[in-house]
Image (cartoon, rainbow, N blue to C red; front, side, top):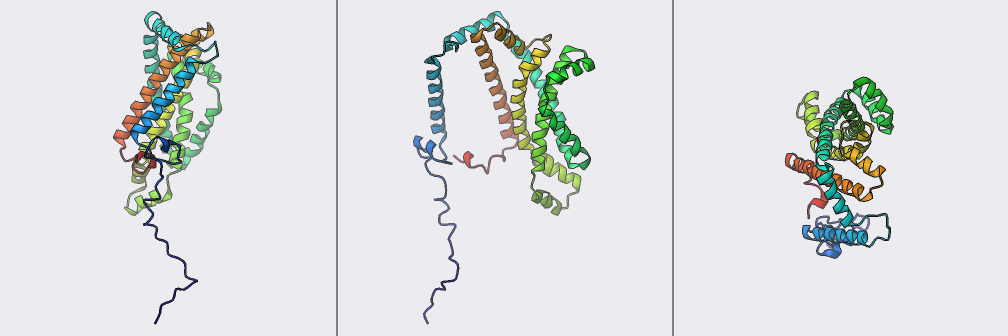
Length: 290
């Protein structure tokens, strides 16, 4: 008896046969960088970065805008600031101050974010997160009346400015934890506080480091404003404002580049700690397979 195919039966699709072909193509060479979702090698990416940096400096050198200082002028200004105007000391002061504010804001924000597992604290954290719409200038008088000491006022302003963003991001991370993660922990007969420790705290550790990186950068952007409000303790922000007030554009560019370099170094250190403490975080990311 001949077996005939049923025309109404659904076609069976072999999903495993084309699994390898489903991977994005174009990662074999330099032209792969123009293919969507392409995975390129580390050498190609380094070459791409070098080309883009070269184009940037070429545009900078040939810029028709006279107000834009040339690299040589910025380098000369940097040497003058470093040797004669105490840029190194001011940079150390600002770095230690920013590090202190980052530690305080991380401790406060993580504590508040983890407390959102309790319904009582959710409205409080939600109200604190709304503080990101407020200006730091409006709190300078309040903190001055509360603390009086200039250094404490400056620290309180920066902690507030970083905390409202940190707690917003971290609370969102915790709220986005899938229900299946909680259910899986409960099937292992964990108590609710054990579930909090395993799923909420340890389970989001890699994301906490990423939020920390973002808010460390926010701290550097707020630093100039805070040090401009309270100038008594000095800092690189005060030097930047003074140079900007005197229209010393090469000096302003030099200070900005130094802040950028220090900020990128700090960002790289936090990223290294994240990869060391949470090596599992990037295992399922497609762009990390190249």
